[in-house]
Length: 367
Ligand code: FDA
Image 1 (cartoon, protein in one colour):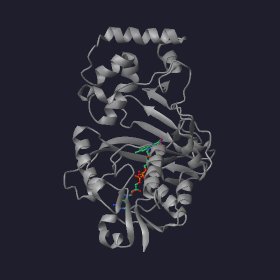
Image 2: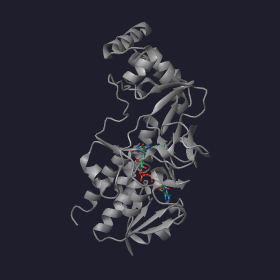
Image 3: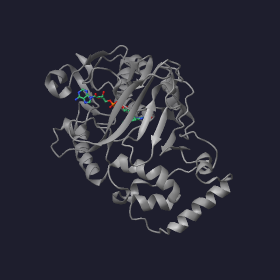
Image 4: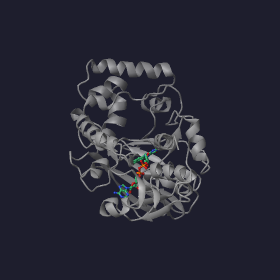
């Protein structure tokens, strides 16, 4: 008899399995995919760690979590500095003095601030009625037209005029020549890829792959005293209140017979016409020097039941629906829910580790 059946070998399930095993518990970890790691899984192609479910850059301000992951693997010094390609013009991201210099030829922060203010004034928007007006009221027309509009419309699959203003609360603008995307104190990529972390975390647990919990539910639950569930919460309750909605993505990955395809790990395509939002060149996450390269084009797509659920749509309808499922989950005695799918939340990796450690503390508090 296992102490825990862990449904999902992603980061949440793996942190929990590691901590439970450390405390002498026996865990069975299952996943419906053919590999461990969930969405942080890397596939080795041409000697390059390919981020199969989208680019993953670890970053955090929390020293405890940084020290925690560094127990499993060493991190390199990768710093995320994406560039935007707008119809062949290249701009630095996030919006900073390099971007403003390229756009307007301004040199000093004051000149850049004056330019943005001038454009905001010209637009004359006092009460933004939609995302377009909101963005222009925050950063002016030039940055909006070249770097925000097309990208956002592709991401959401509709015109910025039809999207609510609240989606963009602020658009980070930096008046220094600093291309580092994150403000966090710690960031990097695990040397040798993310799989190393998960493999270490799952040492001591039994693992069964290509097993869908819902196809073998009773049989699996009978194997353990308790279940940790990291799959979709609405599916757990057989969608009895309705289906929670997501945005999805499609990835098109190709091997290119060149050493260096785009000179950066992440290039955003910010025009409306290019159908993908980003091109990832995986080798640059680890400063790779392989002969060939692997690139992935990322296409945002509508989600329908059965598609890979990537981004929860946390609007009022879905949040209310989730709260109804959460009420049921809170009543469960022998099932713990955790991770991005079971809590219907977008979590970065450091947040998922933090949440898993909180669950561990609660679970083992008096044991
Ligand atoms: P995750 O989805 O990884 O794991 C759940 C597992 O449960 C999956 O393996 C699934 O197969 C399994 N499962 C589900 N239902 C099941 C069933 N019925 N039976 C058996 N198994 C089942 N974060 C960050 O910090 N920096 C970044 O750069 C990025 N980038 C990024 C890009 C994209 C495109 C996305 C979508 C997300 C990111 N993230 C990120 C977030 C990161 O992916 C996320 O924090 C973790 O992967 C979440 O781990 P979980 O364990 O919660 O879910």
